[in-house]
Length: 360
Image 1: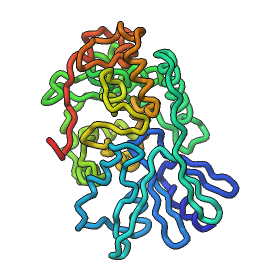
Image 2: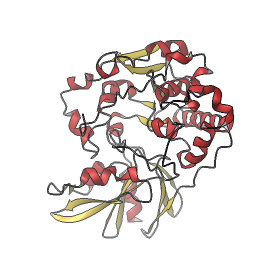
Image 3: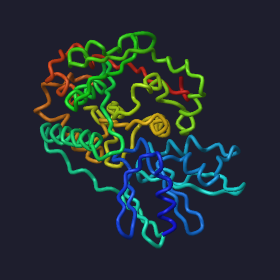
């Protein structure tokens, strides 16, 4: 089973979710779209990896420096599972070749090297807030249990991000319930002048609060900028590099896509991960492997049931936690307020403190 042997070699030192059966190998992408799984087919072999650049190095592939469409191709996942660019152009000994990328899918390679791809099952619709919250917490606690399993070669802890916005505050609440004691927040300066979440973290019981400047990553001497930009997404998450030493060896909870999934006023609601956004949130897709942490974009839990999440957000039971303005996310507000954080402490105004080389 030569193709399977190649697949197993690609696993060395990297995490790919998969199951090895007697006559097939099953690879599974995350249940979100901030990174996927890549395939390169060559002769009778199929190489599979969750790192595009590991896959390319293994097969001696190169990017085509005369091709100007990489950013568009990578960011096409913003259009959702039905419309993204599945084939990434590369060079194989000077000739044009393609690496395939798959999101929200299971990939099966059998003993003859045949490869089949099926989409993961859509999430069942959420009935109400309790249904959403209970299923979210159950999944997060199961994730923590899996990551800490003594049978693993390495166990992972939990770290949360925290700010004065809706999304990171909600992450911090869930993180504490998962046993996290470390939270990371940006110092109150520049774009983050009013966004430091250290006081919220203390009220939630975090004992190790790491506060750093949003541009602390600039102190690196290892061309970190290139390692982040190489995803084709132009560095929207490079500020988070300030905390990579803290993230190492942990599940890291982030509020990625909370501005869409949890927004009571969201438009273009769908079940295919299609978002009205200028970036695809791929900034850490390679770097997380090199640093060694598990990225967990909390709002994307159950994202294929987004229509039902919006319905919950606009339900009568959530009116108590709705501000009835343009910056209104009742679900995370309820999660955070019910943990004792006063209303005025978070989610009062949109900070817009993100960064991307493409528009900053």
